[in-house]
Image 1 (cartoon, rainbow, N blue to C red):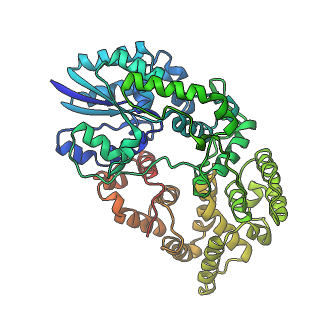
Image 2: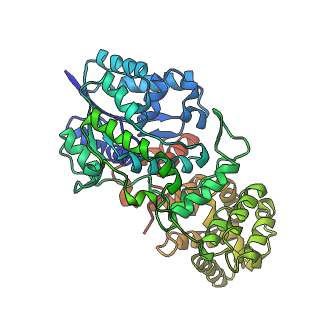
Image 3: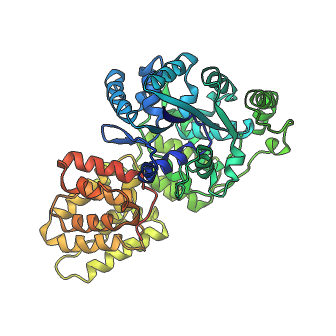
Length: 508
């Protein structure tokens, strides 16, 4: 009989790290007979099986949050997912992993079970469970990161999902997340041990949390501009990217102490319910640490970091961010805030932004890149960039990957320089300088650059050479095929999707 391991989360128990690791080392799993499928939709690679499974088996796929977020037509995407799932289930041993699977209704879980059993599989359901207070704390942070208002997030537990799963999969096994974290290779190593799979893998870190002040800023933004209004994307909130807030360090996020006090009875009752269902035993009384608030302040340099990363937001959104910082009375930030609010993206793209104002928002690292550009140009007799041009180019290089306008800004940068033939050598030198350890461009930045540059460009050749040489890409057997054989649009979309998986890794 064929065997299928169904990993169902739960939420906030390193599911993403497990999925990323299994996908990255799927070749090694195949050597031992295990298949970990990767689904696709348009230019997306999907290693989290929550997305296809929930879309296929939920009662209302058009209301599934991912389908709304990605604006997927439910019938079309489900036809696509079903074909891929059927291909994956042709293998004799399969692993499926998706934390959203745990949230399916009993009827949906029965449909899933019946579907898998009809394919000849013996199903083993596994899950990790987090202590209720820690789960609520972590899940609240995640909901805020995903655009929810804090005021709309009530106490969340998982016992109802555990009950549903056990009603359908009576032999499902659940383990304490704390025990998984204590494993020498963390939750990923623990999961592999439970599965009885002996494959050497280096666990992939994923979905890092944000500190209390970063979540506080996001919460303020979400109060006025939540990501969803009802079951629809909020048209007043462009799909900005805030993952760079994880670079801000500080005290970890904690739930408001007063809210915890009001819900302490629910937390303890949830722990008892989980113990009854799974045998996992958590603390039987409230912990003193639950009832302490986190106090923090915003240093000037961190506030400037946020202003620079959000420089290309619409005016009303920037005004909301400035209003937030005004609550903290940050000394010496007034001039930067004034320029920040007056800054017009189109004016900047037209190269009319004053150099001195642009430099107000440049950090020490960015000033060094500015100086690198300046030094290169001073060494070349053919062409000299003005200080204004240099500051614009430097700032574009350093912000294009981190804002919602990345393609437009990067495209403008490359068109501005690459169209001038007599500047091509300088551009190549600048590109080479930007690929050095000093500036530490991410893979995502490099791939975005490769996407925007024309075929045959010297800089593009350099970019692709560096990408192919990167150690984290050597296990991707299809990488050269993606570069050389696919049609231009398809290959670059595939390449971008591929590289997004390593967007946090740096070129050294």
